[in-house]
Length: 123
Image (cartoon, rainbow, N blue to C red; front, side, top):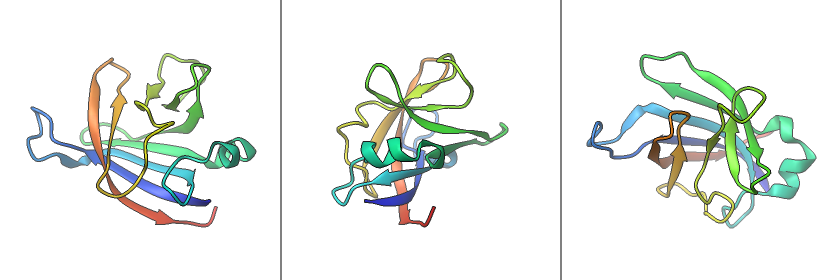
């Protein structure tokens, strides 16, 4: 297991036909050698797993990667569930450059994101 800096950028949508590197997430999380989130390592040091949401024209949001009571992964920026952004099937989805994940935004819309970059880091 290594901690990884993972950059997710908006994939192709009707509003962004070519995707957008100005809309996305920077994530730091423990990832196994086969590209899965490492829940055991995450539980051992949850505070290290953080996320920054960047969106052109909006202030950045800073939060944490959480594992919800529904057994799913989500990004959370404040206490409570109102602002949580679930990541569709991240518990069983491989993280690797070029792969895609779907995130449900706080307004309820689901958007596709591409894993644009991953790099091992010291935390």
